[in-house]
Length: 287
Image 1 (cartoon, rainbow, N blue to C red):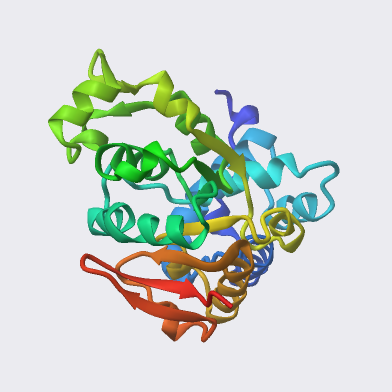
Image 2 (cartoon, rainbow, N blue to C red):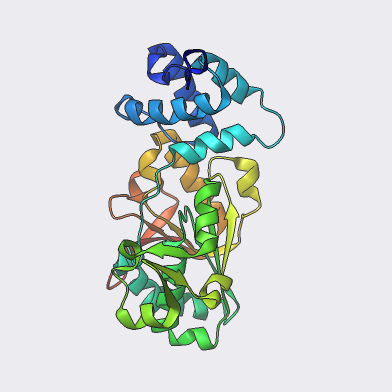
């Protein structure tokens, strides 16, 4: 690279006011807080996107995002760059045990054997929704009598593409029972590819939990929502809005499973705490 082709300066050179303006914009569009403690990470991702576009000013980059036409292709690029996706199969398995042993049997009775729908949000690279399918296949006999649909959503289009591909490193599958790994995965070099059968039972969609118009399509559709380790990235107002959105997405009597460090009771009074043998979950009232 010659001197006249040098990359634009890092976004870290932007003023505190410019960084705050970008953080406020990103928060309004996604609900995710980019606090001062994340500045180094955010600066690196911003500098990469700005360099790709040949832009040297964060102010100009933000103006482009605000006035972007169409579906917001660059906004999606920076969302993909700034969202953190770290997961693995059978993460927080105690909730999966509660799902297979108690929640699904209760819901099957409540719905009179009608189809049940589970939503994984955010689904990241697919380990969570595929884990739900694997655990139900291995542990819930009622699956022979009740149809189950699993929908998996994320704001990051890159991780959705990886989830659909179904190819995972050894670290991601290390907690799976060996029998399930052998039955439902194929070794591909140093990685593992999930079976076509498992891929076919999960439907992946792009969703922004903070976008009211986006979420209206999901109102009243689900019996169980897994929304684990997302709300910790929101501020109090965004958490309450997210809780209300999840409530509206659930059918009466439906359940929401949060991450181990999250508590719906500290966010919203819409849900009742249910204590099962293996997990505490939150329930929308039946009537």
